[in-house]
Image (cartoon, rainbow, N blue to C red; front, side, top):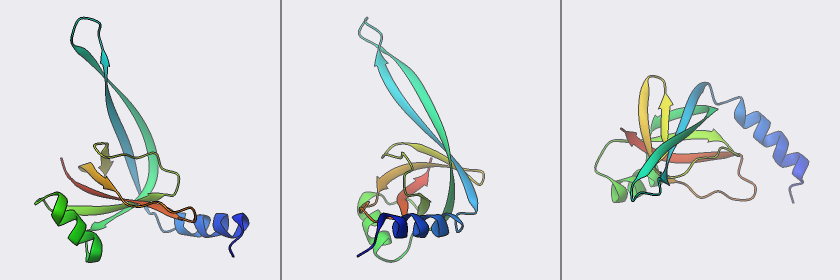
Length: 115
């Protein structure tokens, strides 16, 4: 069985394999009290790796969209949800799905398409 120390060591090693950086932007709509809303945003920065989606993840992505998709790998504790925007290597991507996060996950992987 893995200890918490073992998992932390694996996460540290995994983060060394995240050579790029991503800025996550999340937009939220706050009611303005008059029937409309005001849009606010929050950002966070993470190390990451981006690659064309392949394998089983490509099958999942093709069920969600007909657009070309990318798999973005982020640190295990990255706060990312569907519809967040990621700016990575000059691309703006919209997160379409966050892939399953297990207790021993060493990274967070998301499927994204160009926005």
